[in-house]
Length: 307
Image (cartoon, rainbow, N blue to C red; front, side):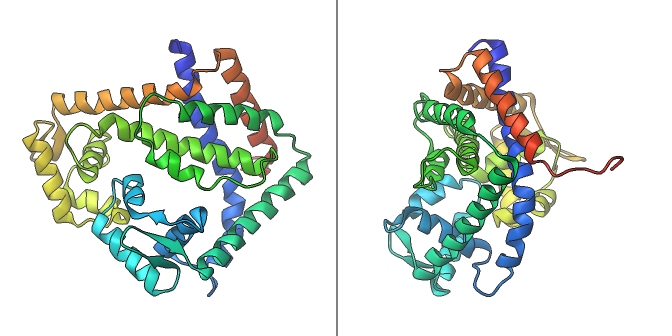
């Protein structure tokens, strides 16, 4: 890909995010009532139940789950797995976990609601998404062949592919989610050999973006990672020891070396990402993006004039 094609591949990522946002907004509202019911798994239980159901009757690997989630507190994840097993959503072994009957029923309801919603949209708007699905299948194939081996999120996402291969809005959604996971892998591959942990890298990223300058701010903004303020203090000091960060009266900030490291990783992420589009010309990729944009416009909720 030349420079223009490279920019188009990044435009694809933006367009994919916009489509998924529009598609999921009303769906999330429909799902909220179900998640508040007594029969639904909550929080981490919901996640583990779906992971296990995605590979059932095989066992989901704990090691693969940890590789897929490099930024969170691993000990908390293991504790959550134990508690999910105690509540009857998964069955644990030394190497992984399997779905219980409760997890399978729960996941079936979610898939059923998703199917009903997307089939309804297809009928309402007489959608024909064959060309989009064919194009996205080609991108997924390109991601699978991309010249780096660290793809835990991509592999993880493909566990959720539907048995019915008929091109549909379900497959547009599935492929775009899979490719979003692929981009996560691209970024992981870009920094994984730099000798830092997930918490240290995310700390660097937040300071680089200007979103945090202290351990307290990091703990406040990233509660879902399940780390304490002290954990972020240690991460900041590790980055100082590497020469990537320095401390001032205003808080922590990146050194020139730190900025260079972070920016190089961002550039490498984009290079890995564009490998998925190697089989596309600039014109073909523009055409695929255009089809997704039109689909997004069709299913977008109407906005009142002046809103």
